[in-house]
Length: 74
Image 1 (cartoon, rainbow, N blue to C red):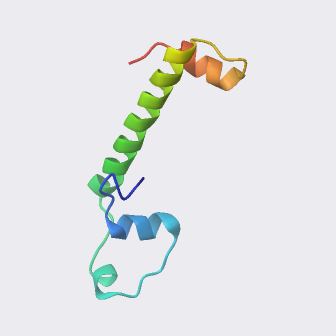
Image 2: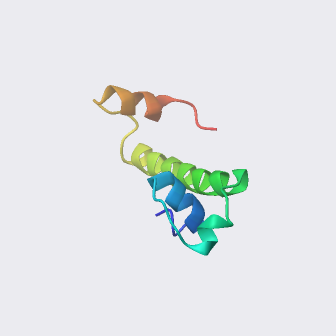
């Protein structure tokens, strides 16, 4: 999923705790934009999934999900 969102390899390595000894890793660093892009993409995927679930039924017996389904969207 993260690769599909265009997440740079440097950020993937950092997020997964991988130590990469390549030259690219030595001269690369994680920027705020690198971090924000996949976060924004995953947030949009989450919102779309929640909206699709809301379309199936506006309520849930699962308390946390029910709270999310009944919160105002925005």
